[in-house]
Length: 189
Image 1 (cartoon, rainbow, N blue to C red):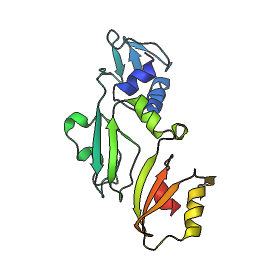
Image 2 (tube, one colour; image 1 turned 180 degrees about the vertical axis):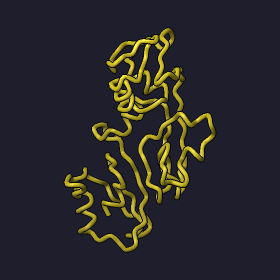
Image 3 (spheres, helix red, strand yellow; image 1 turned 135 degrees about the vertical axis):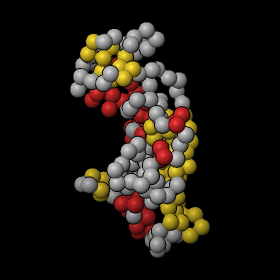
Image 4 (cartoon, rainbow, N blue to C red; image 1 turned 135 degrees about the horizontal axis):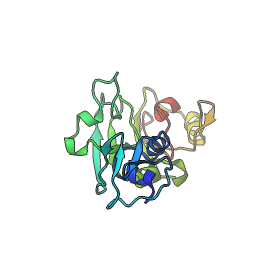
């Protein structure tokens, strides 16, 4: 198994963060510094450590978490009074969230140590639908609905197409997208 994949699957961090840790020389295999993320390791035989801390290979875990409002989807944030990890038992503190919901949003999050699954669920090229129920302060007219469905400009780039349908009124809307930028849905509207 590649070192970068091992670190991600162990629940230590994301694949991208694992790549950075290896490149920065913070990862040791059998007490030798390794700087190549694709370095081949045997999780059952090799002694792998990051900054002197031994990393154990663990079974893949998956939990569904109903994130309440007022809680931030991150491990640590010096400005946040509560993170999702403050709501979880100690056994789940090594998992990482697949995607994010902003502080004022509530809803279902998947937490896992399965980096491959997280990548497939989050990367837009796999076209995994992300569904949101949105309540807006005024009704959405047909012209604005078509505009949102075709994609809008955020940060100088056009978003992907969205599927929008009305629920009980033109203020209660179901939105389906395949990508997810920071505060994507709020900024779309």
